[in-house]
Length: 116
Length: 113
Image 1 (tube, chains in turn cyan, blue):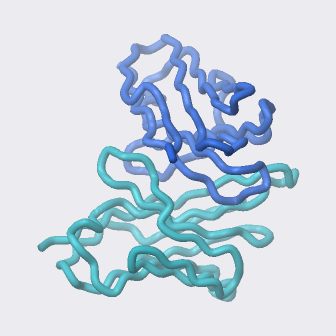
Image 2: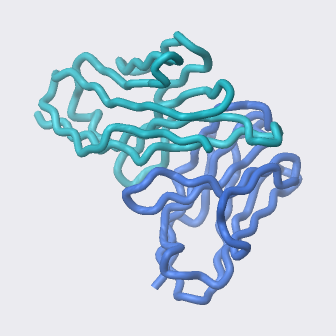
C-alpha cells in the first residue's frame, strides 16, 4: 500500500538557519504530494502541493520539488523564523484501488523548533 | 470565507459511551473525509463521504460510522468507546470526489477515561 516516510525529529534550529525536512514515498500510480503544517493545539494547514514530476510547490518561503526518480518531496526553507515552529507532515494523495476517491496518507510528522 | 468547522472542540467521555462529532465543510465543497490523529502520529484515514454516500473507508472497526447530510455536513459516530479512541479527530473537505486537495478543520479533541 501507499506509505510516506519522513525525517524523524525533533529538529531544532536557530533563527535564519536553513531548513530541510526529508520525505520519501511509496505509491502505485501517480500521486499528488503535499506538505501540511500543524501549529500547537490546531488542525492541519495546507502549506504547499505538487501534482506531477518536477513540479515545485512553494508558499511562505517554503519549497518542495516532486522528484519521481528518487520518490522524494523534501521540504526546504532558506531562513527560518521563530513563527515557523510547528509539526510538519508530508502526505500523498492517490486514488484508491477502486478508483473512486482520493485519500491522504501521512508521514509521522517532524517537530520543528526555531530558537531566537 | 469560512473554513471547515468542527464541533465540539473538546470532549471527555468514559469507556463504553457513545460520541457524535460534527463537521461543516467549506462552502461549495461536496466531499468530507474523517481522520484520526493519535498523539505523536500522523492522521489516519477513517472515512470519505460524497453526495451522502460512503466512498472510502480506512482500517477502523465497525464501532466507527459516519453519515453525510444533504447540505454536505457530516457526523462521525463512535460506539462503545475504548481508551485507545482518545485522539484528535479531524474533518477535511474537498470540492469534488475527484479533487486531490483536502482542507482541514481545527479538529475535535476526544479524551476517553
